[in-house]
Length: 489
Image (cartoon, rainbow, N blue to C red; front, side, top):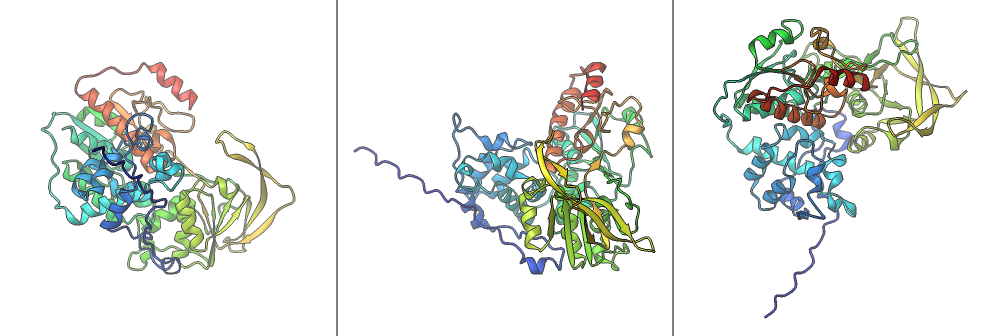
């Protein structure tokens, strides 16, 4: 008898929901907003995946993943309920899954490429990654992570942010002895000092760092390379060096009145709150002050973090001032959605022109100007144009400047033959190699301020190149390559 034709597969058009704290409740605490999915919901979400076959519908989701995770492979294991094998597949490529499952802009990457997303909502790849990492942390025993026998090669990693942690983990998996040098008392870089607790609990970061440590990576905290020693000195003891020192230099507007009390950079504000636990004052002895109204300048994820943190610290109104429209906001849509749910006021198509203070030198108002959008600029977004005579005033007791960061200059300043670009980033080739033989760089110090997952992608590329170098491929680009790069950037 002929086989019965298979019934067409029923498509579930929307993602299964992620439970979240109620907006009114969560503005009073620093607990994580999304609560995570349970195992049964994860299986149902995984079953939405079409498991695209090679060919016309190749695995486009993997094309969008900077760290090259076998996405269909791990989702197939979730469909089967085999969570242990699913997280093992992720761990083959990804050293920080619990982090990326929370803060990665997957809507523009893996999920943005999902075939199902052409007519429906894409598969919740980020939610599945988070679920598996959280399941692993709860259910699996913590022991030494198996790595191959030692190659005898030693690598120094400067900076324990997303790029550095990726390099360290990948090289440890290949048998190299890795030592990380971190300036702060905790590892994680922007993951610990920049992203708030309600988006990324610090216990999650510490657990991921512990996984790297269990691979045999030696971590030296409170060690500032560029002060205690230099890259040149490290090269006397190590076969290769990776620099991943990030973009910790805050950007400023340069407007009149910016030196008034009550105006601070997003870096200072978030570091005080996240790393130094100012939100638990006086239990932690780091005070922080917000007035009744806080105005945040900027529209990226950092601006959303500042505005939402301000609410949780007790301000009555938190305002975002951004010079373009809602469509051009660079923050993740999920973060914008959460900010709006929490009552953040958005003053769009407006930019500050002056900060006004009282007789004691404290900021009391922001003078702003209305804008309209013109033709697209180099970023592809429409250029904001000032509207003459449209000035208006916003009362403010605290102003937070969240308009971007510049690369940390310490390592380039103390390594004379390390070429940099006019933006202050370290000039690197596509493999992350610098102008100094035996030295690689990646993440924000090489690309400028970008996302966590792109920094991790830089780390993976650099780790591959470093491994080839360590096992015998000693060729290095000619000096003129870096001269050209430093001019073009």
